[in-house]
Length: 256
Figure (tube, rainbow, N blue to C red):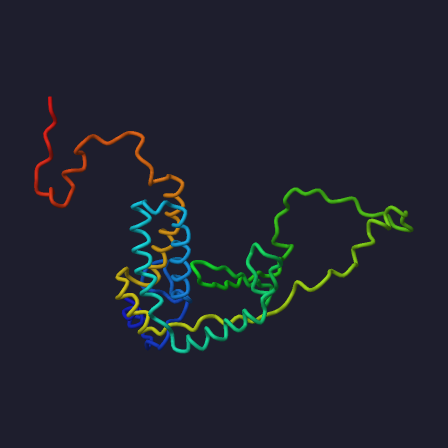
């Protein structure tokens, strides 16, 4: 499908797929980092599935399918991935105060108003950079907050002076440190095509959408407690007709 789009656009296929370009499906555009996105989503799914009992049939089937897909995705690596991984590990080790977990301490600035967030799932370390643009007060809506009464001019009382004493006091340490995080090397177009063939779920962007849906489904299934017995028991023999060895037999007749 991608090749057809390039042919119609009269564009020569390149070595890499350009992020944000059309995929041939309406509203679906080329993902900038499909490999790392799938690894993170699949790992998050496996992490959430731990909340379900091991005897749950849904957990067993979901874990089996997710582990299978995760193994396929991890087997495909971009050229130069090993060198990038070694540099990434060294940078995290050299700056532990920057790459801290969201729950542990201050999130340091990264680049232009961005923050590096580290998370560990299933023994894998993930670094996500959240780009935060400087807010523009002209675009912010008034939230109904009342404007405080301005301070009076002239000499202040001793009580007012004590309340303003700590405003200009410097904070201990530093909570800002700029670290440039290099993204994972992109997969070549041929590698993405091979990955799509192995996964068998259409374009890699479609696979990502399905994986995101499966991740959300875990929360729904956990909330519904699908591993528990039904409150209203099904009649005896209700599902017998749908069993594989009984598929050609007629459904049982109801007794009068």
